[in-house]
Length: 238
Image (cartoon, rainbow, N blue to C red; front, side):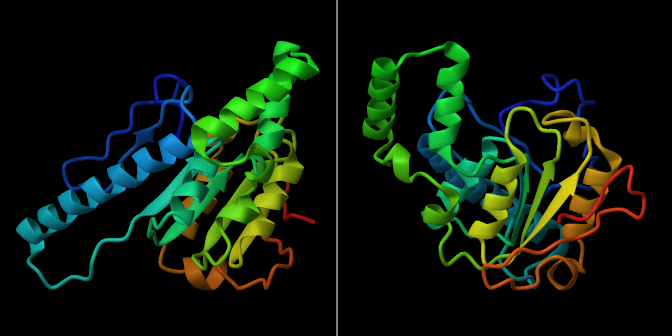
């Protein structure tokens, strides 16, 4: 998965994949660096792990396999980094976005609000970010990065997310051609990572039925999916 937090930072148990697993990895990006830089680092990381997995698989099972393609689970600002990496040639099988912002311009505005920055400093900050990344802040929306991306995408967003508004989750889903949007009630932006309903739907999405059940082409329209039969744990987007 792509996220800015290691397991110890989110108070989750350390992930133990076991001796039989050789194809699951965590990429903990440096949130202090810009998304373009993190996207490049993610791309390099996946290419490195692809070489490792193909070599390990060859040792264990022989050569009769197709090339490795990864799935990505991205939380929060890992979403924009993933979108930028996809726009620059990263090839993956499927992507699940959890609590992802869709517009880096709005992210910067919220950040400036927290710091109580005035108009002059805001303007200078945005100009510097655009200069450093080579991407205009005003044009840094999901839709501008993922045009033409056809892979199945699952977008999960908590209705009560106080850090990234629910509307941004819907914008993320609308940006992709082949996506599903799911609204959940999972106790917020970070606690959703520990929600059994969220974990179950992401696991199902990456299962063998993913393309059929979650990846129906939407032709740019909105769609819905019920992650759970229990409305207290999850309900379809409306």
